[in-house]
Amino acid sequence: MRRKVPQRVPWGWSVAGVVGVVALWQLACILLKVPLYLVPSPLATVEALAADARILGPHLAATAWESVLGLAIAFAFGLAVAVVMNASRVSRGLLYPSLVLSQAVPLMAVAPLVLIWFGLGPSAKVLIVAFVCFFPVTVNAYEGFRTVDPLYLELLHTLGARRRDIYRHVVVPATLPGILAGLRVGGTYSVLGAVIGEWLGGSRGLGVYMTRALQSFRTDRLFAAILLVMLMSLGLFLVVDGVGFWLTPWVQRRLRA
Image (cartoon, rainbow, N blue to C red; front, top):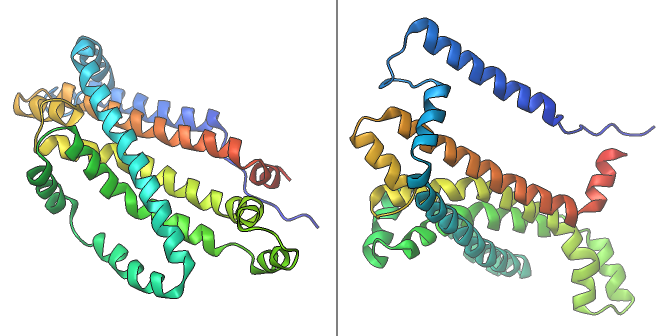
């Protein structure tokens, strides 16, 4: 008897759900006559987005660059730490508690320190993004290493396989789904980290634009920036998901079985 595997929700239903929420939002703003400075309607948000498109361009590019670069740094260091923790119990005992404790430190306490140490330039925002994304990438990669079947490793050792062949044929395929899961989570967190860093100081980025919109009580512009943050997070998630679809065809075949 073939085991049933939950299938992905069709994109059509996802789009329909979003359209329904937006339509209800627009209808509520019209019927309740909600003031623009409290909650702008979707139409007012799109109009503000179109009116400030030229201004938003550089801010959007700055946030996107900080998010992608910070996520890449978190991926490189997170994967390296996961490999070290997987190498021995001693290294896991030394690193894992510190890794967990780092998440107990509030981001709003870490971000100002990073800005003090590295200034208000883009490098500080990149480091904040890397700090935010480091934990999910590392933990998911490490859990991926733990899913490797030891029987396969023993078989390849018995056959005299070299270390690189073991990683290529067993370790990497078993670990990739976990690594990609961490990148999906990190991709959504990365934009949030960049925006928080820009809130605290800087001259360019969506966080700076949101601060200026809030100070001038332009709620429609604030919602327009929030919309861009959401779309950017979704875009990074879809890019990682697409890369994962291409890199793990055996997982897709199992899901379709």
